[in-house]
Image (cartoon, rainbow, N blue to C red; front, top):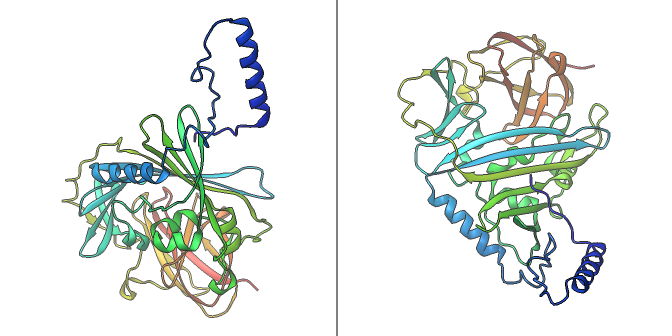
Length: 377
């Protein structure tokens, strides 16, 4: 990510003295303000004619007019008692067309909408496997990660290479208008989502920074500071962890740098265990204290189990394998609740009464495995 530097009072004094000294040494020379310019320019003067809204709208129009565009999503997380930030990187290509509308570079899968249902196609040994895509994809269109902003008087900082705008938007208002962002802005580990009546987003904002390249004024990135939001909606004090002090999500844009053969989806096999259930007929329930078998057919496979929780408490979720496994959790309305690493093959989590979807990830380990869930005493 590019960095910006604040124009401090000491820098202005230094610049003044430097200019004064040079005017004495180089007698008769004309001071060229462009040559003597600071890295950061006073945005209240020279840049007053630059409109964020015009620049942003033009960038959105450009992306929508291109055949495709590339999006990289980077995440940084840090708790008060953690020494290092976590990191995650997703890389997508979005196509401006019906049917096949996205490709996930890291997961090697296309997304296609057929009669209102979204499917994923995963590559496995030069063949493709079709499976149901996760429900949030139902909100994704080719322009789903091109947000709509209407911003009055954003703070502007200009550097030699970029225009940087800073402003805030209400978190609830933004997520209601852009549901496709939720899974990325709420990606967590070692925390659980509070009950909806236990938090209030009316005064919670995302602090947003938007970068435009110079001199093209093309969009480079949109960054969200989600610290205030995560600490409001999550029970962060799980397993000895504390509140977030850093929680940034960066959406980096570019015209598409990748080439893809969009005619590949003509021969494929069907995932015998869909990654996600779209209706009750697709659901496979797991009972407490009774191991359930799942089958990872390919290295990017995910298998879903549904769990009815009839008693609030702390639940022990275990897989009979220790290699890099994790699971995602959704409530019965497909609201994303969290991403959890199963260190040593298990995870303990507090659950309220309700029905949940647990999506277990193969993470490179194909084969047959068993999942068991018990209630801790």
